[in-house]
Amino acid sequence: MLTFHNPDHHLHHASELKDGKVSPCFELPHRADTVLARVRQVGLGQLAIPAHYGKERYARIHSERYVNFLESAWQEWTALGHRHDALPLVWPVRDLRSDIEPEHIDGKLGFYAMDAGVAITAGTWQAVRRSADTALNGMDHLLQGNRSAFALCRPPGHHAAAEYMGGYCYLNNAAIAAQSCLDQGGKRVAILDVDFHHGNGTQSIFYQRPDVLFVSLHGDPRRSYPYFSGHRDETGSGAGQGFNLNYPLPHGTDWGSYATALDDACKRIRAYQPDALVISLGVDTYENDPISHFRLTSHDFFGIGAAIASIQSPTLFVMEGGYMVDEIGINAVNVLQGYTGGV
Ligand SMILES: NCCCNCCCCCC(O)(O)C(F)(F)F
Ligand SMILES: [Zn+2]
Image 1 (cartoon, rainbow, N blue to C red):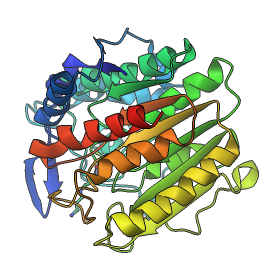
Image 2 (cartoon, protein in one colour):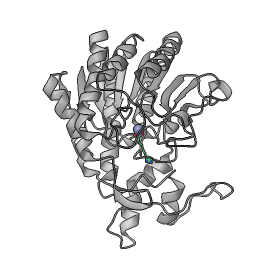
Image 3 (tube, helix red, strand yellow):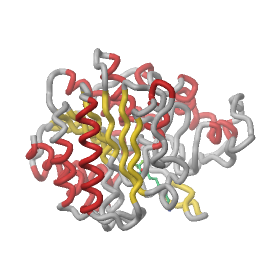
């Protein structure tokens, strides 16, 4: 399996507002380095640096003004004399207005964010666009007739919606890759999100569309971030009704119950007969993950890969979360080896 990776991810090392304090973001550069080292160590396959893609590719999923905001935010922030990370301080919640884009950067930061887990730094724009390029090149690799690819994306993407960032995510790498498949002749794409946290951004982007089936297994939002999406009754709307499937699972979920949900999800995806399958691969479902609450063992990740292989579609794995940095490489690559062993 070919791995695309993005060395520019080191340009993004942000802070986050967590538990009432501004602290170094859990989404550390070392995460991607550890996964890459494991890919090399097991000899998973060739490595490649992605080609550069234009902003118009990101704007197939995100609004043009949001993409332009990501590109210009740091410059607008430092024009005020700031040298530290940019963080939002006010959001258009409930009956506050969001039909008018503020001109001041403080207003824009909240207008384009769902939470304070998305600081903007000097290198953020370059890092996030190269992360999206990684997923785009992975999808191109599939469209050239290959069965699978691994897009080692950092920063992650599945919390980012058309016009907002959140939860360490800025551009939705998996959604951008799925759209690229459809733009190049694909009729149906399935996205399976196995990160512990619900992919609210991916759900939002495709919620009214039947050409992308979104399926997610995640911590029950009544007790798990992002708290405000991911319930079972969110099944799509309009033409997209029935093309959104959520499997919220309780804290303490182990392989037994996880595998039951995963098997059902894979059956639904097989029935959809996608031209391509995109996996939002978060491994924060790991029992020792510091910010999550499932109890999968490293061995269980082989089973996730084998279940995905049973769908028998060309498959792009897109890296999302996972914070137990020592084991993140083992767990992510176990999924990939479970897949290649199962195909
Ligand atoms: N007490 C809970 C604090 C939660 N803080 C934010 C968690 C963000 C999770 C991000 C992720 O793992 O879903 C991604 F894949 F996007 F990286
Ligand atoms: Zn996560």
